[in-house]
Image (cartoon, helix red, strand yellow):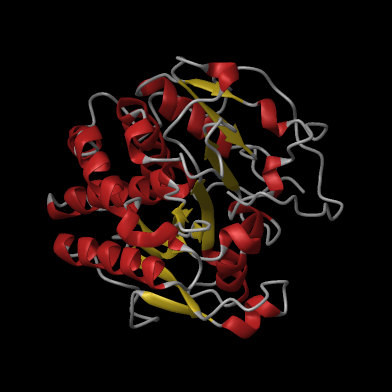
Length: 347
């Protein structure tokens, strides 16, 4: 996650809440995320702690050299991710013709990116069966801060955890598709670059979208979901940020999905506009939100290894990472399969 705060630009005030209580508006009968939904449950169960761990030990290994934007190590991590998608039979968007969307050095330089080299967003895509023109985005950044003074900053939680979560969510949707129960809406699995230096990859995508932003239903953004912070040590929780900023339905859907699955504690502390961390503005969902796309940002908090060389894969809580990943999948499943597109009714 980006460390330096982004200046506020007069965005709407967020609602401050405590631990979640399911809101009205989405009934158990209307939800696609139901205990009796065999297709959902079968796909949901493919999200496993051991597979998340296997991929994270590669993504956050010393061989990836901290995955700094445009570095050889980041490109090596990207190749691993693409080979994973190929092994699942998940292709890039046809309109792009490649898994790579180039993010030019010049674009980043104009936005304070210094002398960063060219880099790439990585996109994988599952086309919807009934409403393919409507796009659900599941995103995470796969860059980190590189190597400093010969020490590798592996970024296992930031954002290796989000990266492998997106990969597993893609696998779950692909398993459902193979069983003849693919999503009604299309799903874009978006791995962005340049987040640590200034949210560059997501800004480039939203400035040069492969699919029109007007057709983009939601961005579910995952940035650090593998650890806990001091305030929540040992709890089964996740912070959810921004889910009611633009849509009255997104928070309701996420809460209902949570209640029907692992029933984590949903913590809305960082939705408070007075909070000094101002996390709503510090990860890639922000570039979707400022373009009027509803977002939900899933996050574990600022822990003692944040942006330190000790953010290593052996410190990840893999059972909790599994549960949080399953929650994002369950939320995406409902949004992708419900009869009506979620509304944008707030500013």
